[in-house]
Length: 124
Image (tube, rainbow, N blue to C red; front, side, top):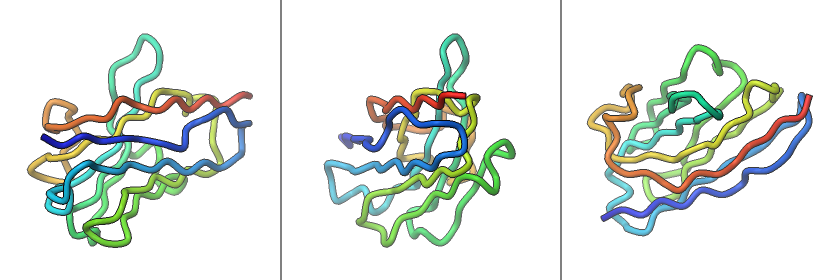
């Protein structure tokens, strides 16, 4: 069983930057593709970005390309989500996910493990 813990959320102003981090409870974490999703109030959980277990491949939702970067220094380090030029519409609970068979998986049902989420609120 993999437990994921997100950190780094908060209240920021439009145009600010924020960095989220996701750590796992097991060393098996280093074999998992990792991803980030977000869910705004009253909306579905949407794919944001993902990275392969090796850290060599990334994939982004079109809506965040150029503003958000997912990274991991190596297979055993926490996964980060660096967000810049934040917009009001980026406001959501951000969830870390692990275990999809492909890092290009954009369906939430394709990911096996989830964190509890961290709130990001962008004031306009």
